[in-house]
Length: 67
Image (cartoon, rainbow, N blue to C red; front, side, top):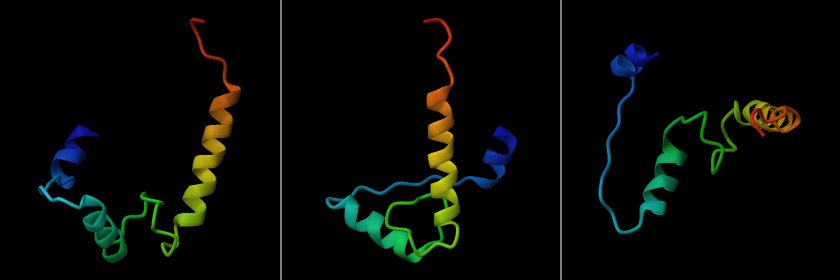
């Protein structure tokens, strides 16, 4: 996995006074399927929302070890 990240992932940042505006612009102009907030137009949104809800529900049913 780390090899894949090294070859494919890119990270950058900028300093700005109103980062929420930059975030809104990026989400509205770039396809970011794993970001659900402000991204309802993505065709994967409903699928990922259900997967996350099911995962959270399933996690709540699993006992925490060591307690």
